[in-house]
Length: 556
View 1 (spheres, helix red, strand yellow):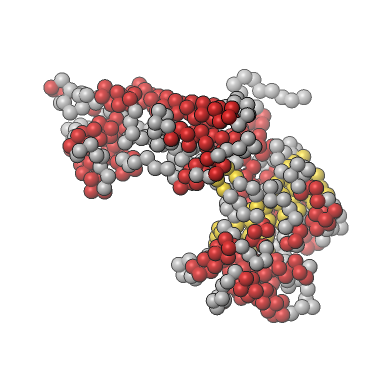
View 2 (cartoon, rainbow, N blue to C red):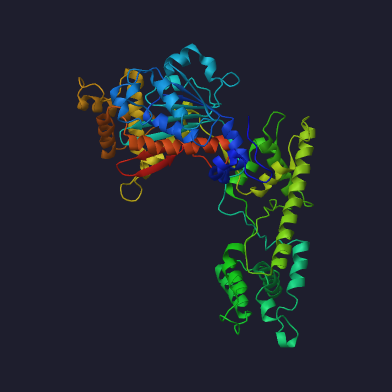
């Protein structure tokens, strides 16, 4: 029987997941609990990834692995014990990982990735697969990975010795709640009627001394800095042909104008609200700008011409675009976020000013909502499909929304590579410098050679003592050179590549638990971002070098 909490008290689930609910909220948690994660390869890295997903409460997981537990597994995988030796690795890891969170359902399939892809291809196709997200941990054959649908979010993971890599493949991800550092947008250069009226009311006696019937020191020191800035902007524009301060020198002069109006014969020798106003000049006295990410969304063909099948994200984005284009709505500006900073002020004045901003934000969101309903009607869809709450979330984050167009795995591994891949890798190689730009691009090339070697020979480089490491290294070096030639890179190969080839061969395909644990945290974090559609996930490759303690991110 389910336990219910008294009214106003947190439920048992809210208590259990209290900290993470503060990060991604109830909506994010619901999406997490609706997910079904498939893990191919119950390695140390794979189990560490699942651990970090099971603890916050994914819905289900299925482990697919055909190997038996060996003694060597016990030294790197904390989710196997002595009793597991000789038993199914998929079964044992599923059972022991499942103990971490009884709310999560766990299952296993004792089969190999290659065989399952060949015999049950429907498991990897949208509409048929039970899996919402797929994790594939090395070693794996490249041809098998290329059979996965690009519509299912897939996370390819390498953990080889001291080197680890994550590659994300998914359809376009649209993120509204990116959790920016601040949502504050004061619009000081674009005040509206209600805001201007409050400025006139609260600053009419600003320049009059108390003895002449002006403000008392207490009143003068509690005028919110937003109103101070707006008042002094009016005075500045009156003296400068209607233009606000725009250059650095003009803004410094504007600061002096505010500073000279401050009452100095008060306790402390200055007024805190005036100091706040001066500190806010450079950050807030500027024209409203649209971020490059939001521009990319608004200029996307899916936003300009939404279709009956498109996601609601694009409907709302189109409605925002229309809001900006209409003089009776946004008149070129994005909807107001409604974010408002703390400041020195009387409580009643602060709340009244905050409500003016919130009211304007609600007004803008309502306009966008009506625009969205009109688009839905035009497309023959239910006009109530999109709620005002959804629109309000979008308009609140309008200048921070992100569209991430993930490239498919096939686009990266096809031969010859496409132009985007050629340019991305060539640019990273050309900009590499051991001193000022020590990126991990050569780690990537070495891992490509490692992957090619395994896919062709079916054996982990350095695993068999019957093969000399020097012979394997030369073979992998030839593979690396062939790859570099395919992207048009003809320069001399940096010694760093030889070092990397030697290092991953020396690893023999084995894992170090500390590296597996670290990449497990990275991968799980990115999966949570993709599942919840919150925060900004990596696009699309992360490489970690445990020797150098360095991480690089690339889009390949």
